[in-house]
Image (cartoon, rainbow, N blue to C red; front, side):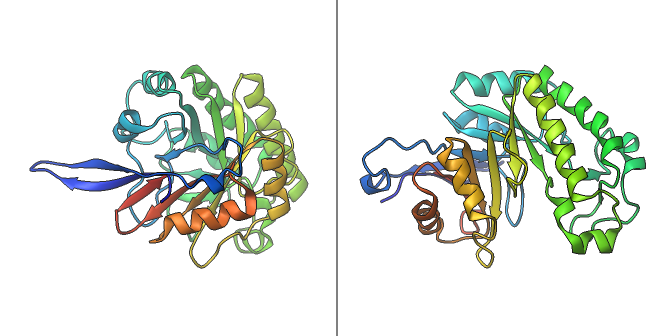
Length: 281
């Protein structure tokens, strides 16, 4: 048996409600010491099935790392109230922002647009890579100001590794160099820290020593693709390391395989197509 909260769809006459199955934990995963792994809930990342909803997270998340996109359409008129309610249940609440791209549905897109490439990212409709980091920085800081005013605990930096991709640079023509990109996310993390929040890196820990955690995305045909030594260094430092794994019918097995590599303090969330959403451990 394994420890999890598994979200299953349950049909009613009018709507689909989440049901939860609780499971037990094998003692040998903890190797004699309490695990620091946290449950993870995720309203921001959607791949093949549905992401967690705000209402589902509020009703079920406990002592978890919760990732929300407070700038998304229909999130709610009072993000601060949502954050406060989640924190009252022991959750640490993180706000999603993409720092390596501009998204044309965001309310600050027109301000950010002069600092972006002109060609849309082929993988994501409506997204454009950041080209001028110096121009983008104050706009991202303004986002952080709003996030801080709502009382969030963390800010998660999606697409912070875009400058490391030479193929993307050649294809889309962004001018930002690797040193400029690293200086940009370091400066933005420093700003987050100055507001009393923690920084969550995404996909890389290169030049990210001031960050408090890192998230990686994993796929059945592309597992553990990142710098393993970097991820292990964050685990060893007691920092939060999260793997979000997609499209997987054997979530418990994959979680155990990753914890065999990174130890029981690794936090893990998994998208299972059979249940139409995330499995929470």
